[in-house]
Image (tube, rainbow, N blue to C red; front, side, top):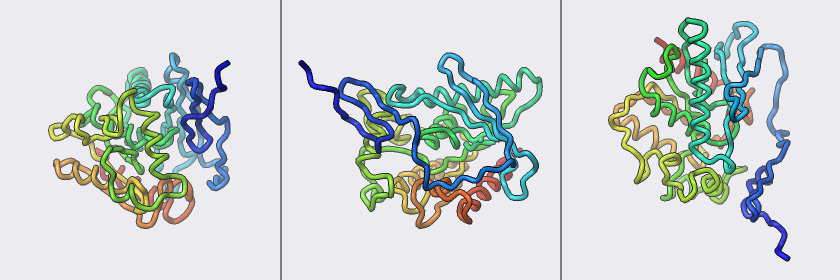
Length: 290
């Protein structure tokens, strides 16, 4: 009689992959350290945007113009998760959410403006998982400047909040101190479970500047805002991403919050630093608007 299935990949108990290929995903995640304020300042509504894959999005809008917030309509799309659905499934789903928005604009016969999050709409900001900024990058590259394929929707910029990029060669910050919930073992496991089978951390979907990644020199991009914490393990990789794009003449703004770890803007969302992130995004949105 064969042995019972055993855990071969464990992501903090939230996701476990077993030796027989089965997957356990926790129904509830303990967010006790994240303070949430319930109020009536936001009106929300859910829409099914992809019937085939049962994917929904949530639309948020201020109940009244806020004095200091974004004052934006935010669309938060769900997407398929790895390892059941490896990349590029999540990127494809993000495209699907934008195409849903495009259909709304076409059906109503008037122009829709999308300001990224990456979302307006920031592609990937409020979705699940850890590759949101990565998704926004691939949307920016695939859609190009002015997002002509989405007309009448017009993406005017992308916000990459602590984007997850990978690479086989380690950076100094990756080899430095671990974070509260992140270490090299966890980061490697995330990529191992996310990239297409047979791929590694240099896969183009993980590393925009990997050995097999297409050159971005000739690609025209809408403005990009990159925000990262100074104590994030992926800080050096994010900083290099922004510097390389700047070196190619792309319109990229890099903002680093010293002493902060991954997720600082959500873990302490109502703090002074959390509000500053909102103000940085708001300023970028205004500067990037036509």
